[in-house]
Length: 450
Image (cartoon, rainbow, N blue to C red):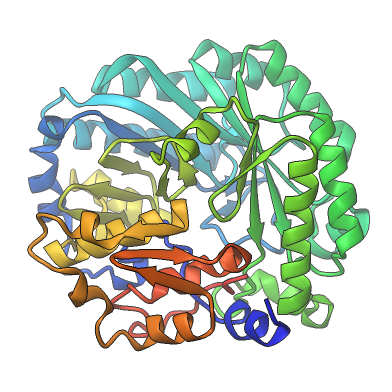
């Protein structure tokens, strides 16, 4: 792939497509009433996933793009968890108290800031409000720097079987540039503690495109991380959006790699992980061959949601906590972001829905196409359009963006099958954008495609 095409598509700012439409399309016209009305029918749609957002960290990492609050005190966390328990009651009541739960995911922020007894109490509230399946999976995002033994014990006692650890980079120069100092030994201790407690699946998050990051430092980070043999890796490109995340202004923009360098870093990380025995899954995930994520990729059952690539096959996701986004068969719902407003709505006995989006049949078709492209790097437009009321011509005719991708050799179309060329797979988000009816219409800043 030429440097010109890497610059053209790698520098393009496009969504990550963990949903379609993306959150930029959400509107305040969809609120608590619409959410409550759809929750009333959710149990009939099959088992659901539950996402709980814990928006607290002990310190700020300059690269962070999450909704989080920095606190050294325990009281704000405890107060927030009390409010979240009330939200669980509201959601359970609206849904009829008999919703089957298949997966639970704690994200943040740093969910592991919770005290052991707080985590146990929150899990008890979930189990009393919903009907957990016998083998329901529970996943937690963890900061290895602050993880302690009592928290590990609480995770194990409450059925946590998956943990995702933030690593980003082991290079001390890069760590200084993002204000996140984390030694290999800290990560090693966290993994050993989780393993001994019976947590069977561990994921590491890595980031490329960070300040002062080099190809060699990426190689060294992967080699160290692979020694600990996590089942999965998620590898993300740093999204520099200082207009939205003011703390990112502390990062020296001159020290950030350009599109070509970012692509080189992404590819060398992929090469090193594959040398270490990991299979490449979709755009940015890697897994050991016997991991469920790898099996899903081989079976073409891989899914994509707000946590990235996943084996979660639930059609509904209940989002709990400030800023949390839920997905129901009818569309998306997002809670208020400010903690005070979130708590205020719940205090009045109202679901804290700030905005959302109700899906049309066209949206559902485009979402299926985008998900298959993101997961499989190809999509059978005829098969995906079947029964939708739309034909494939609707998707490809007068699609100038798709035509440009074809002319540049990024994609090919044979019959009704569109395929992303292997050497251009890192540009798949740009291909997905060709099927996004709302792309460039929201005035929203996204991350770079590569």
